[in-house]
Length: 91
Image (cartoon, rainbow, N blue to C red; front, side, top):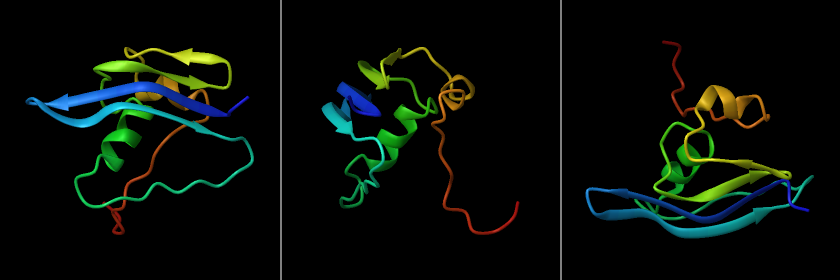
């Protein structure tokens, strides 16, 4: 069983598909990198996983729990999933 899985994840911005029907699984105990060129949807994918942006479609699974599109980032953190930002300076 994967630790994290997404099925048919979709997010559009003004008609542009930032993430389009993405399905992935992440194995427990493995370190996985997400790479791609600028504008390929990496940050949008992370924002969708962590509740910073609302899904247009698809499902996110953490273990056997289904996380629906209406979940907010504070609720996702309760499952142990969160994000950080690249800002190197203290604000």
